[in-house]
Image (cartoon, rainbow, N blue to C red; front, side):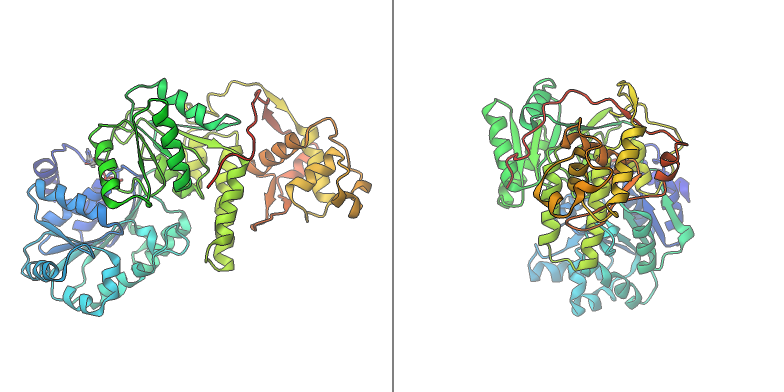
Length: 521
Ligand code: ADP
């Protein structure tokens, strides 16, 4: 059976071998086993259902959340001589009817639909008349509330499946799923646990780094100028920032494009085409750009702002180096970006418990910026995968040769201070107490009477706050999940306080600290 799959791969797609994970997923589908496949961005998820679609008797329904993506995929399939079409809000009623009629008569091998279609009972009735053999759920994390892009209409997928006369084989695919999200997807779609195929989150050709204390625009400009003709994406948090950064780069003579949801569809398509056909090397964009962009030679992805969580970060950063060549993923960090993300969570319409989850995710994203551990390892472990090697050897932390210094004494002072403050206060106040600040709040609360008051008076308050961030990232301290989190301690501090274990930190590099009022919005 796999031999036939190989033949299809070669004939229709022109590839000679399957990638890790693809073969296993395809094999399971061909055995009619419902499957959950987790493949990194660029790992080749589409082929996992396109190849079985060509081997199966009936139609393969592909549920995909993005209309633009659907059209691209269908165009590509048609070019390869495969009969495929899509049903979404971009086509009129007449066209819809015609396509549905053709689908019922088995004209298509693949039929892409937007999940919102399932909200119409009529449409579900139509599906029941189509000979469906496989249902592929793309971006399957959208089914889970714990995922980062929950869509209510995804919850109708199982109902639709249940309504079909013959049970189809279900395959759910995503690049970004933590263990909880995986569990949820399986539960929603009744996929047996043992039918999960996870291929590592590791992307060996990507080099990760977090840049702190640099003027962002100058950094980006120099980075691009040092790499003429290299293709790259710069993600910024807001439309306004994209506009400003784009304008700045144009003024400096960089041929850059821009992309965000505030532009007309025509402008966006134009920018996207220019990038894909390499008329422009650099794209400045919000996260609206990229889902399904099949540009394989992206050499760098720079994040101008902190993303809201690791899922978003890895999905966006992962657009670099799809061709397997060495590529860079750089995150420009300023503490102010954390405030922006908190603000966005607070303003969101999420209920209280969902907000808590978002705060927790944001904290893990922040920890990524403060950790001194291997960044690739951090990512892989975040997604619940096992990282066999000690380190990747290429990320910023792995190649950082700065000397490690013993900060055990400072760490002990910080832990004691947090303890004395009953783990009830935020990072800033802890830092102020250790600094010995005469701040009004401190006096009002008599915190100057604590034995830990002024213990780190020779350090700047910012320095102490940075140390606390580091201790949080390394798992000694923890923050509560709220807009104004308080710092607490974990069990990891016990051996340090007992003097049985030491804490090391790389010595501080000389930095030109950024003005926290970096222009935003
Ligand atoms: P994903 O959806 O997982 O991000 P895609 O399905 O868009 O990834 O595939 C990414 C790229 O890899 C595409 O250009 C695709 O044609 C290519 N690709 C997929 N499978 C293979 C394979 N077995 N051999 C070579 N290239 C492949």
